[in-house]
Image (cartoon, rainbow, N blue to C red; front, side, top):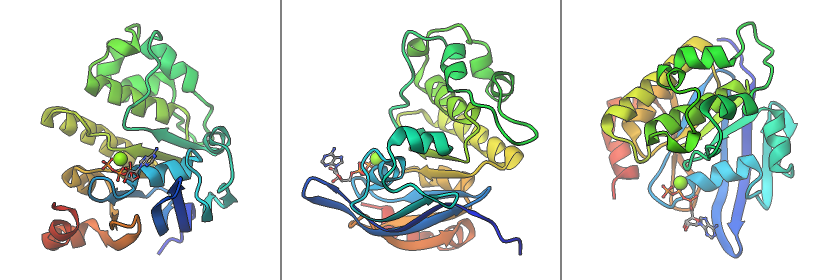
Length: 240
Ligand SMILES: Nc1ncnc2c1ncn2[C@@H]1O[C@H](COP(=O)(O)OP(=O)(O)OP(=O)(O)O)[C@@H](O)[C@H]1O
Ligand SMILES: [Mg+2]
């Protein structure tokens, strides 16, 4: 089997908010062109894991490497410069800027043969193509999510990290986002880490899944097939 690079490698991190020890020894990795999910109940530390990777809430101990570079103590801007695109649950669209301006501001040249450009994003997100001059703040929730994902892609990152892209969206919009993400993954071979409460979406877009326990540690790693064949695994780890 082809040996792939680990684009993200986390070893035994411990992350705190003040005295609150939220992530207690988490290890995981994402290989090149792999889509991986983190699943877990409310409040176990999924967002904190992403914030640890992005340098927003750096771990106190342990190690995080991006494409072989030790980034554990890096500032967030440096981590994004190395090629980690973060799509937070709140989406953080720039209000007062148009869809096009939001995209152009995030654009970075890509190394591959078919990099993400403004035109390519418009091709993949027809909902945005019709609204390039609309103020980002006036987009619907689903359109904002599309823009947030488009903005991550146009930076041509090494890895995209998404926090609950389905949050607050209707089932129809969740379906649309799932289809777009799936298309992007299969066509462009993007490397992705996705946090989701909506495990049905996670099972559709990711091929490997980390289940997080109440100490912000990984209690199980499973393939999509294993989770589909054994629904009780999800039941016991995710149901309340
Ligand atoms: N800024 C903060 N200061 C103190 N505690 C925090 C802070 N942010 C999060 N926490 C706490 O850390 C724990 C993990 O939070 P986190 O947001 O990472 O969970 P999550 O798995 O993303 O939850 P959800 O599914 O609700 O998004 C929770 O107990 C939360 O209350
Ligand atoms: Mg969260």
